[in-house]
Image 1 (cartoon, helix red, strand yellow):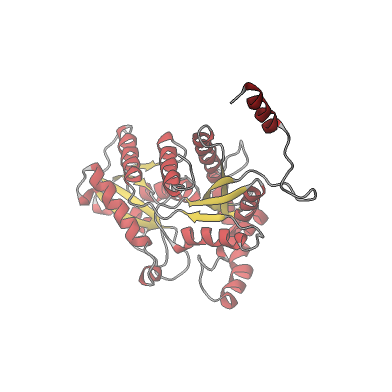
Image 2 (cartoon, rainbow, N blue to C red):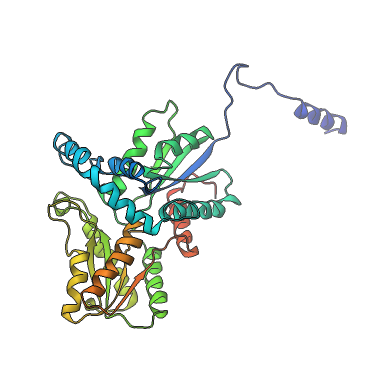
Length: 360
C-alpha cells in the first residue's frame, strides 16, 4: 500500500461523521451500571412529626405488619402514633449523630457506599454506587430514578440483610420494583440474595468477636447472638429467617472453636401481643444472673450497620437490664459497619452478582 493511499484513508477516518440520531432526538448517555446498597431506614430528625412520618411508613408496610388495614390503620394512626413518636424520638436522640444531624445508620451506610465506590472507580468507571433507605431518605425511588437518569441501564440491588426475611429483604426489593414499574425505559435488574452462610461473612464475624473479646478486662461466660425478631407464624408460613439465623450462629461458633453451651441465640425488638421468635433478648438478660451467668457479650449478626436496635436497645437498654438484674460485666460487639474487611465482603458479593455485566 502506497504512502499516499494510507494518508488518504487516515483523512477519511478523521472526517466528522453525521450522528445516527435525528437532530431533535434527546441525548443518550453512555450506558452505565448502578449498584445500590439498601438498608432499613431512618427518620430525618428526632422531633415528633419526623418520627411520626417515619413510623407511619414503617408500620404501614404490609410486609412488616400484615394485619387487615381496615383494623390496623385506625389503631396505628389514632392510638399508636399519638404516643410512640415521643418515646422513639428520645431513643434516637440518645444515639443521634449530632455533628451530621442524622442517625448513625445513615452515616455508616453512606460511608459503606462511598468506600465500595472507591473500590470500583479505577477498574470499572462505568459503575455508579449509591445507597437508599426502605423507609425515610434517601428513598429507594429517588435513588433509582437518579441512577437511571445518569445512564444506568443495568442495576444491582444489594439488600444489606445477611439473613433473608420478608419484612427486610423482600420489602426492600418490593419498593424497588414499585419504582421500576413506573419507568418508560426500565433497566435490567439483579437482586442479591441472602449471604447468611457466606464463608467471608462468617470469618469476619468470628474475627470481630475474637478481636473485641481480646480487648476486654473480663472473659464472657456466654455470648448472646441477638437477631431482630419476627412473629413466630412467619416461620410456620415458610419464611426462612429463623433457619438462617440458626445457621449463621452455628457456623460462627464452629469458626471460633467454641462448645454449644458458650453461645445462645436470642431475638429482640418484638412488637404487639402475638408470639414472636424466642427466646426474647430482654427476658434472657433479666434471667441470666439468676442462673449464675454474670459476665456476657452480645453481638447482633442480622445487622451489618449499627443502628437504634444495636446502639440503644442492646448497648444501652440491654446493658441496664442485665446489670440491674445482678449481672456484673456486659460487652456489646459492634456491627461490621464500614471496616475494610466488610467493604471487602461487599465488593466480593457485588462482583459475584455482576458476573457477565463486567468485561473483567
